[in-house]
Amino acid sequence: MVVYYERLERKRPTPSDWSFISRYLFRRCTGVEDPNVNPSGLIDWAEVYGLCINLISRLEDPLGDGKGLEIIQGREVEHNGDSEDIQFGFDVSSKSEPWRRGYHAALMGAARAAERLDGWVSDTTRKLSFPGEVVIGPSNPRPRPVPYGVTTAPLEENCRPAAEPPADYYSKILTTAGFTSRQRLEAALAYADWLEFKGLPSSAEEIFNWGLDIAMGALPHDVNNAVDIQTGIVNNDATFVSENLLDAANALAIHHAVNNNVAMALPILASVLRARRNLSIPPVDDIVSSQAKEPSTFGSLVGLIKSIVISPPYPPLPPSGDEAPIRNATAICKEAAIMAHIGEILFASSNDDSKQSSSIRNSDSLSQKKSGLSWTRDAVDVSENTLLSLNKTDTEARRKCSECLEVGLENWSTMVRQMIESKQTEISSKREKANNGWGWFWNRDSAKEDEIEESRWQRDEAFVEERKKRVSRLLEKESEGQNKSGIFAMLFL
Image (cartoon, rainbow, N blue to C red; front, side, top):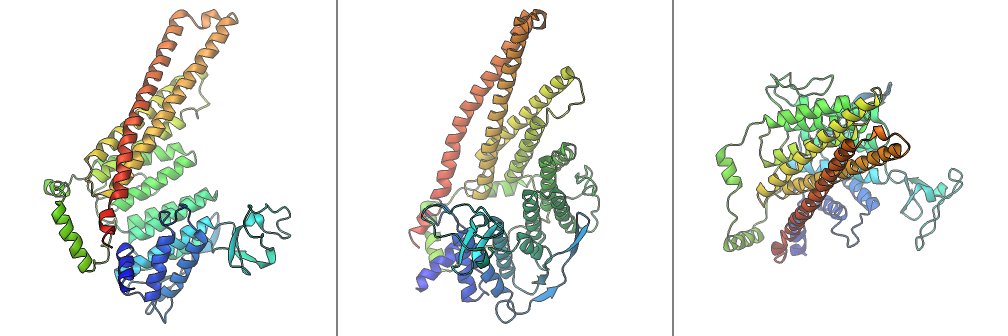
């Protein structure tokens, strides 16, 4: 039994100053939320939520793991002209860093589960969760049938919401003293994304701005010109920018883009990209050490045996995000993601201006689409080159870079296909007008130019498809490498 729990602790570390039951609940929670644990790949979010709230209640129990916590007053914010009290938080400054990190993970896990359970109900008589559409009762006169093989639908009088609102958990993180600015920023951005999903863009923008305030509040005291508060644009003359600040500004820009506010989104993205390109380059010694040779098989075996005999320490604290980032391979991959966003926004918004004449609008639209394609093509090039240069041990950076490369290629392929279809539609329309007696509208030279342009886009499409095949092989190797990592160690555990 001791060996079994030691194996679990190595696989899913828990804070050493938690009680045995709290550590058990944390391991269960992180395990159930991992789709690789379940053969079906599905996550039981009701179970995740139950485990998380049980863990949170234990951590907040003043007679248990929460001994010494102090309740602090919540914060009042404005939402659409109405004031709203944010959920109270605690002062966890007296707790150890692993304790605080685990508490933050539990709150974020509960918030994620609550998002998935939105609109679901819990049958108190059977301890089961159901979608609200299948509940039998006066408020749902036409309930949806439950799937075949599932137990009978619940009665309305026996039901209660399956989870508290996700805002309760996000707000608690935002008002808790003792979390790092990075932890609070993660909660703010997730909260804003949730409000965006619920169709509350103005409320989401307030939380995005709150996240920007969190990032700015952690800057050095002599830095007060990093961001234009009114627009969210990173100032070109900023003397210091942090990773949190750039991430918060980037998230605000994506919010504006999703809500068709391109005039606000593009300047922010351009300023973030400029700030990232102006970051300091890491020293040569750091680059050489990060690209050091992997240990030999004998060295790996010795390290493995040592890790079995000696209990590994709790995972180190990730960067707070308050420090100035450096322009390493991971940062360059983030630049590629921003370039892909700019390309997508330019291409998708190319037909929005309806005030100009048709000929001018078509010309500007084509130019903007080509510009979007250029940005996307450059993003793919940067992502692929960065992925090839990353150290094999930097799995998280390689995963993000792989995702950026895959999305960029898909966008590039979609854009080229739309350009072909648009040109084909234009040629068909001109042919139809020529056949109806408007021969002057489409002379031979114009027809030749249209055919040449269509042929060029078709060649571009063939090139993109060939590149997708080449990159897919690279991504398959990348996925296989990540799946195989750690298998050798698991044989000994």
